[in-house]
Image (cartoon, rainbow, N blue to C red; front, side):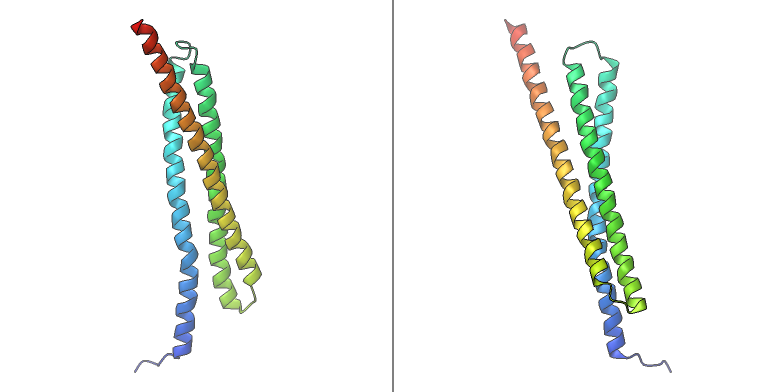
Length: 155
């Protein structure tokens, strides 16, 4: 016969698992953000490679490379900050488990780690927004340049 489990112990264990899983969902979101950032980096790298092959053909190529460099730096910041947010989330989960095992009052540490994860995620989203604004400005200027070229050819 199996020993019967204390219902309060089962409830307590279930609650600990539920609380520990909540930050994991944020960690999944951060991983998705990192995937988006990585894809954007790859697109920038492709554009830089394409421009490097024809660097002297058009006068705007140097300016375009500078814009791509700024976008790349903004994405670097977003990646580092998002990764720090992920580290903070992992620290929060670890703190939850260790705090439960040691019956220690870890609320302030847990609050700090989870708060740091939220702040890092917000900061990485801000850096990503900056990169997106740089990208859209570059696209608009390139479209205007092409329209000007077409206008000159049609005259």
